[in-house]
Structure formats: C-alpha cells, structure tokens
Length: 295
Image (cartoon, rainbow, N blue to C red; front, side):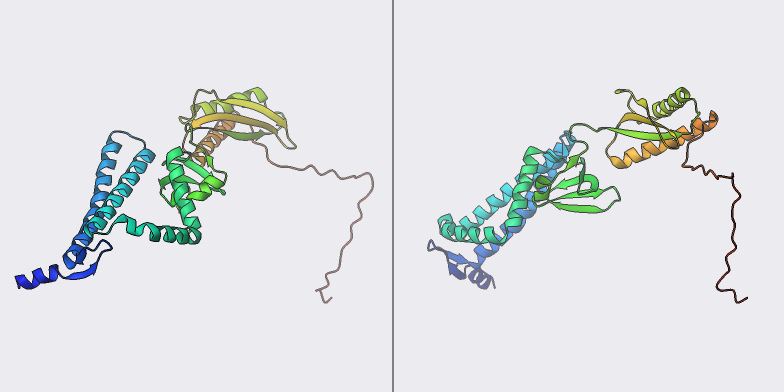
C-alpha cells in the first residue's frame, strides 16, 4: 500500500519547459501551498490590521496596508509555486504579453477601475467614514476597494460605485478637511411683530442646541419683507457628519423656535390673500339650471 502511494506520488504528469518532470506530489504540494498561502496571507493582513487599529491609525490607511500585504503575499506564493514546478518565468514572457494585450482590450473598464482604486488609496480624496455626495446620492464611505467603493446611503441602502466614477465625476466630500458644516433655518413671522425680539428668540433657540458650535458664532439676519411675512434667516455651524444630522438639528431648532414664539405671542406667518369686492354697484346674481334636473 505504501509503495503504491509512493509510486502515485512520484507519477509524472508532464514536463516543464526547463525539462523537469512535474509529478502528482508536486502538483498537490503546489495546491496546498496556494490554499495555505491564500488564507495565511488573509489572516496575516487581518492581524496586522487589528494591531494598526489599536494603534489608532486611520481606517483608510489600514485598509491600504492590508491590501498591499495581501497582494504581495499572493505574488510570492505564485512565484514559489512556479519554482516548485520548475517552470521558469521567461517561459511566460511572450504568453503573458499576448494575454495582457488581449485582456487590455476586453477589460478596459475593469483595469480603469483597478487603477482608479489605487489612485484613491494613494491620494485619499475619499476616505473611510467620510460623508460624500455623488449623483444626488449621499452616504458614508464604508470601504474603498480595488474595483469599487461601498457607500452606505442615508436611507441605509448600500451603494457600490465604480472607482473610475469617483475620479471622473464631481464628488462633494462633506468631511474632507473637517466635520464642520454651516446650515441655515428660515423663519417667517407676521407683519407687526417686534423684529428685535424675534431675532433674539431665534438666536436663543439656536444657541441652546448642544450640537451648534459657539465659534464661529451663530447669527440672525432680517432677510426680507416677504409677500406674507417678515423673513429671518439664522446661520450656524455644527460639527456633524452629513445632511441627515443637519436635518435633525434644524428640526430641533424649529421646535424650540415655535415654543419661544408661543410664549411671547409671536405668530408664524402663513400664506394669505385679501379679496376686495367693489360694492359701489349692486351685484348681479344668476341661478343656473342644472342640466341633470329633469324638471
């Protein structure tokens, strides 16, 4: 039994370009090397990533390092496998060139996205946990891969964007430099309201919110005499991560403004129209007969 296994192990399946026999045992060793090397490189990249995360390194930097380590180990495994089989690299020179030309024509988009992914990782215009906006879609960047970038939209849906689009299209990165964002709340009050008191109450509501920054200081502007209201705009900065959080802050401030206005008998304006009838001459009224009435 042992002799049969040994004979099977040493059984020659093919001959390499260098004249070396390729046996069943060598094929099994190469397959084992590829499997162990693949999962071993992933495990090593994972362990290094954990160590770097504990060292408080930025998430996108950790992702790039893990990706580089994984690819380097795959290349080393491939070269080792070729060496075990006795296949010289020069034997693949011509074939590799021909394959590269064919693949280049047939997979331009894939190659473009791959190169774009490495550009994004190197230049870092978009990083993990950034809040970005592209094609009217807003969300948080969760992963920057070699082919596409995964974004979690504000409604919870995951969006996969090809990396080339992130370089070719206009992308709004709300958190590229910092997380400070300026926003505004518009309020209209009825004519005759005490404008100074209105401005003070709006400013009070803004300053009371814990997410509003004190510097730069919030401000209130008497914007315009509207058709139906006196228009006030308040501007303030907040340290948040995107539009969703700004909507929540603006909603809280509107609630507080409504409470303060109610306490001070200030009425929020609403659209209205005055209709004037000329009664200098009698109005002529006519009763129209209903066509459906058989009478």
